[in-house]
Length: 428
Image (cartoon, rainbow, N blue to C red):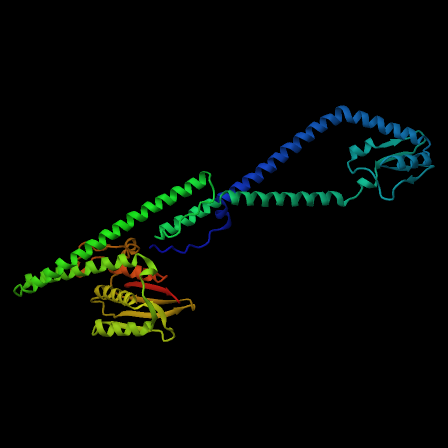
């Protein structure tokens, strides 16, 4: 089981570039905006050409007819009749007549277009035509703009909802891949669709089933071999006890003990690979367990305890937590020889959500490129070190499995001097 590292959140622009869903929505919006600009530009060009060649002469002639109907000098009664019959406004300015059909000034703000609506009579009057009250509402363009913005936002929401629905199987496949990568094959990827994404989800499920069968076969074979090796190993040890004392007998017994420990560790690692299902938890005083372990198995050795009395009883597997503490202390003492500083074992609560176990030595530490590999099975950074002095490379791996099966994690760092190993376990 692999522990997923906590990564800091990425900036929004990087998340936007990473998200296929939002990139598609952005593409749709850009396409809509560009299409609108092309349509509006083409329409304006077409209307402008038609206005200059066809509509403008007809418009000038129509305004001339309106001015002739008002008369010269202007007749207010005729102007009122025009306003009542047509949706227009009329404003007359001159030496004899000054009259307006509407209180507010009428006519467009564009000077070129205003010239088309203005006529001068022979007696010095100016007649200005404009649009009626139905088109003089200044709030109308603003309301139209807000409605257009609301429509655009609605289209954005609809596009996002459709794209989210379209790519929902990708979220399921991603979550399933993360579960499979963590070793959890209990829940397959749901098959929501019968399209290409649904076929992809079914293929990933089939791949996961094959991987699960392969892993179970490998674990079953390893467990069977380990169990079968125990009996001949026990007989070999009994026969070795009958050999005359000497260096050869001691070397043989040491190798047999190493083989026994290796088989036990392999069996334990396969059990813990099942996660929390392999645990037998109980309410446990972690500080008391650490004190008991140091007193019984590390008596007389340079081990310093710094235990926080505020820790409450925790729901832990006694045998597995004892193995974790033993392996961490044994590893630290093995590399702390000659430093003159005791190995330090400490416990402390973390924000009321977890408990932290820290074991630190004052040895030479390890190279940075080897640091993240120490908790891998059978990894030994010092190839020249003898197996009797350096173990087989399963101690820290088992510690990692114990921490992860409890829902926690194991981290390692160079403490300068020495190596610091931290096991963080959640409250339960």
